[in-house]
Length: 210
Length: 198
Image 1 (cartoon, rainbow over the protein chains, first blue to last red):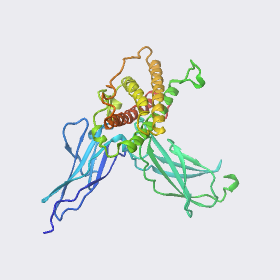
Image 2: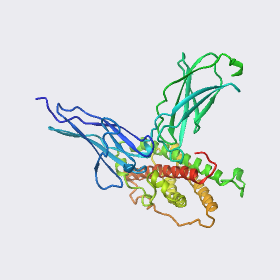
Image 3: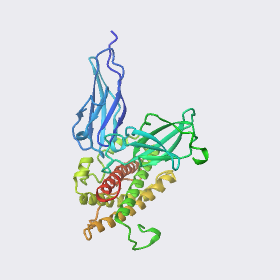
Image 4: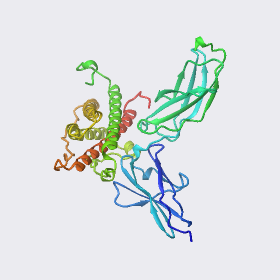
């Protein structure tokens, strides 16, 4: 009658955007032609019991969000996802990780571009991603800026260290440029690039001055 | 040596000392991550070591902060002393790591070099941290002898899997503890050192 147990779900990613909370996402398997329920079960090396996901909503469909009270940074989490329907159930492979090892920040925000006349250069400024505690030293963020001629293909990447601005010299006067910024924690994954920002370099900046 | 160009009693500011300690802790964790990944790729694939290495770190009995709130609630003196205790507790295991890595079959030179470098830099960091604590609290430098580590597994040399797991577990715990130390020092730097922009 075309009804059978669910396919094996697959945990696709676990990430922390701030080193204080984290989320996991999974890809459901086939539903076997029946209504299928998914549950994320976890334990840690400090727990003796298995618990269910504390929050299935905050991080969207097929996800589990662990808030601060459910997050320890240097503790192994052991996570599986279970799919169940009327015909049976199926369980994902086990994911084991420490939260310090899965930190991936959101992109930097408030990227602004300004032409500075003396000496002639482009000043790129940005803010850290929201809700990341840099002030107390909990998270140390490194940044990269990439830019290219709007009509060009080749990006040039510049390291900005932990600063939230960068002076860029050596532009072609009169040309349009595209600029993006990304960031990563001192030990972790690079974020996505920020959305593109555009600027035209004024004609008054003769090449020899730049 | 902490002093530049080998000078003996140079007077480096405490915030400069802290800055150096943080650079060192950052470097040590980067190396610890690299050596773990390299060992994992070369020797641990398919052996299920990750499941066995849960809750096996010799330093897990040290009551260290596990999240930001705990790290910020603990008094900075206590956090400094915890950093010293974790560093000291790695003295013996790192010595073992360096001596043993040379006996691993076809151990790439890069793993050996990193093990030696981590041992050396960890000694430097411990020396620097003791210097800092001395400055902040003269005379309060405890020197309890630490050997939380129970030593290498008593196992016949033939059992390679057990020896490799012992290694894997050491590197797994080193990666974790070196990150902890690095994170604590970055928090301490921001809270203790005036004039440092965090």
